[in-house]
Image (tube, rainbow over all chains, first blue to last red; front, side, top):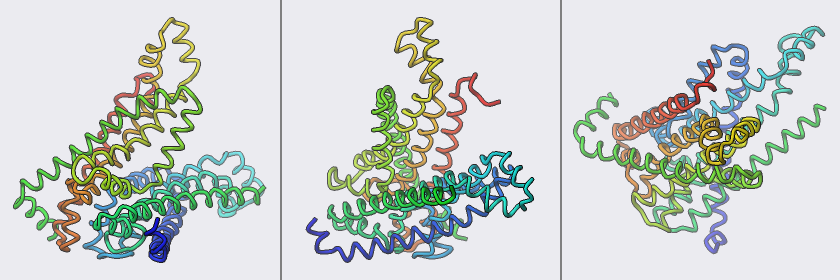
Length: 206
Length: 215
């Protein structure tokens, strides 16, 4: 605790970097997942291929993935972000596609009968109704990415992992605790905020 | 070119490569085995009460937010460095998915099925062993499958606390910026993770009772 009192500025910088890496990756991955997920909801073949490929990316161990990207993009933040995007795609594509598929066919039929076009049905009927499932996927991806992004410090991407790695090399436990627990707290806070946003969006729609 | 260099590195250091691979597999298999031996019985006990299940899920969800690297690093001040501390940390990491899935799977077993078995005069242990566990098996194995991939991935990080394994080539490769050496660690580690996923997926299908298989 004494260490934290004297070094809180260092912790804040690490936290800031961690937030930038995780949320940049999540934003990119969410956009890609929406596009691919919508296509996958329409076609079983796209669904199967997308899940097989992104499932493969998901299985690659994080440190191995970061290492494999080094010959291609070198060390640093870009490497970490690409790795985190690849890691979170499967969770979100699956939820977007399943969420849209579970929208009752009658509702879509009714909308079509009222003369709505495909794009309007997607934006005003399908996506809002699929929202809980889509946000559930986003929440899992967020918690996972925040916790996995810790490893990115090893390839000079910064973030809370820097505290843990320097704690390991100096054999100084307080730094490891601060790094680990701050990452925990960030994951919990992000998870709860997303739950809150989802409830707000749902109430607004009612 | 890089791949050929990586291959030549393996050919030049067969002992080191085989050693790291063996350590990696041993570490992962032992951690997964210990986690199954602990989480499945505890899950069976907790699944009996709704409160117990809730407790297990809350604890496991908290465990999920704690970074694997932090778990490994925090074990070091307590147990030092080497194989045993790494094994301890990886076992902890493998517990949550198996525990959650065991509890959830047992709670979802159709109550009529259990009633019918009781009505036929089966004892508590018989109902558990011959009805509940077989019906819950696919979901329990889905948890073991998730845990297996996490353990193989986590074992790559074990290198930081002197646990050995394929991570040693990656950390050395990054430290010296020796790209072929990076691949010597990264490619086999990826293949092991994919292999574990495949193997447990196969076991999950094989152990699903014939009557429950999707045709």
